[in-house]
Image (cartoon, rainbow, N blue to C red):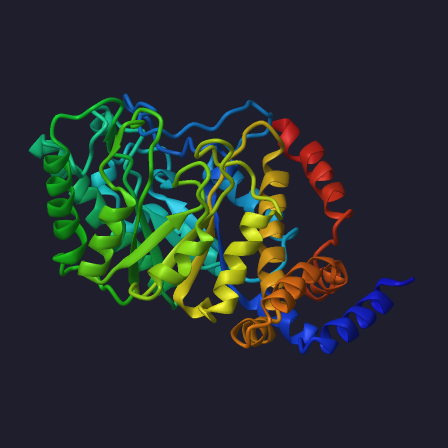
Length: 420
């Protein structure tokens, strides 16, 4: 049976339960997903190093050949990735990916001109940019504390970096002719019991207020700020300054966004149930799509229940306009282009799966007391002809279908990656 016929039959099956598969397909393609820049180079960045260290609990494991060594190589890799994944995309760039033409530029002194090559690439490829300050892998982060540091010299340094990053974001937003989402992930914490939990959090509040809440030189309509919590990290196993409670409260009180990463909670905890809670009060959420494996190990995202449940919650709350979606993982043990494609295709699949959910009917069944009928329908949705709709989505986007795109990765590996 031809795939076109399979899609036609799938449309009829979904129609019987009140779902327009064609409409869902188009809606799924239109949801922006911001791909992270750091998969291609193992979170090394492109700074001209001057005594920098790898502090901050960031570690990509593996030594698969072909790592991008320059901004140009990275951008070539992103273009290959984008040819393999359907839908609307953005690119999330970290501050340590500045393109300074071989010149040493301190992070606190970074300016929009140091990201002009990224903005030019963005315009040429119609891929808007997002941005992250880099509060790690730097001599001024060696103590384990940056914006929360009790050393005023260190604290002020990172405040300056945060402001510089937000000004770069405004330039990116203007280049995009839109907005730039800026995520502040701050790894500050302690390996063992700290004597003063209060002081570090007071320092962090002071710093964030100086850098974001009270900073008047940055246009907040163009620079959309988020703060990201974490349970623990390497070197901060016992205490993380920016906990969920802290950042949820800070974001609410300062009217900025909250970022939730799928791997930043207890090992048995998932974030899908948190979406409906946070969005009762928060104006917007940034969702970092990742896959923890016993800890925040940032495994390549796959089309699993955690991913499906996250987007089902967004669909059932009709919250697509209240969330920004970004990927966040890095695996250096496999081909990095394939890692990107697997995770981004899985993310788009989960978005499509959610768009095909009969949410209204499920709510009707449940509220009418037919809880068995609701549960039965939820389970039966797992065997609907979803694959045929996904294949049609890929066809419409001009992207290789499942079972086809890995051939393109292998060709690129042989032609490009093997020479690095």
